Image (cartoon, rainbow, N blue to C red; front, side):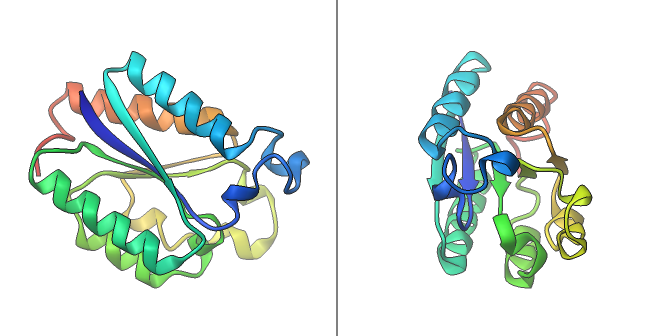
Length: 157
């Protein structure tokens, strides 16, 4: 099976309790289980990680970029949380691991929220962005990676 990382940033460990009207009632373990199940149906081995620390997220991206270069991983589905709007370091990390495909995902429609959430440092270096579909956005991102793999676009550096 082709390996894919689902990487979640700060505060996503609070899913289910933090603003369920915005982020939904599902917990992070439920989100991860749905991603693993959906990925399995697509022939993907989904591995899930979450951190509230920017440096840890950077380390995970660097590791998965190296795995991609070695032909051992196909890409990353990434919800950088609030770091989306502030982290040039994450922007540079994604740019640095190119051509590893990174798909930016957000549970809420960030463009319909506060003005500061409308700018993403991640979008310009991501393979694509999916916002506003809740957990289904992660599944759509996995679908996109599976299609890239089928087309021979995600498994080769």
